[in-house]
Length: 146
Image (cartoon, rainbow, N blue to C red; front, side, top):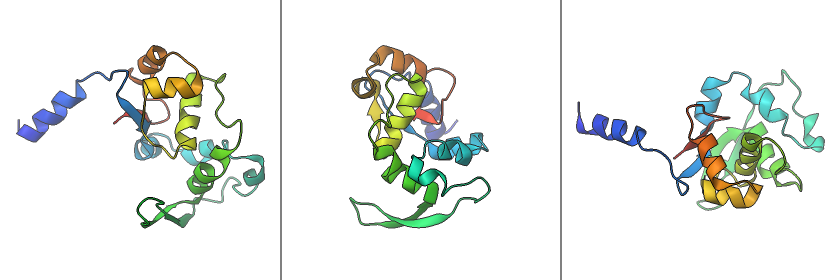
């Protein structure tokens, strides 16, 4: 076994802690759920729902990283969802299912990594419960540790 393969195997055995950062791995999610686009459309605000009707397909648009100024192509649905709909009041529902609340939180913060302790503050759930749910064998909506 090579040194890099050993390092990957060793890291995969480490258990996340309360301070381990999590994020949504959209590439993982897209490869494991063929209906990801339809699912995300369900999170759109009222003013954008009619814009993304089933069958329209996903269109790419130019997006600009506000920190680096880099221009890159992104999915139009994701762009509108993250930059508009997820910023609306009431988007994060602390009384909803835990994984849904965490997913909404990551959409609203631009998918910036957060630990279970940080997530707990936003959704008002125990950090230990969040950690146990997100670090279990099942991956919910692509939410994974970094």
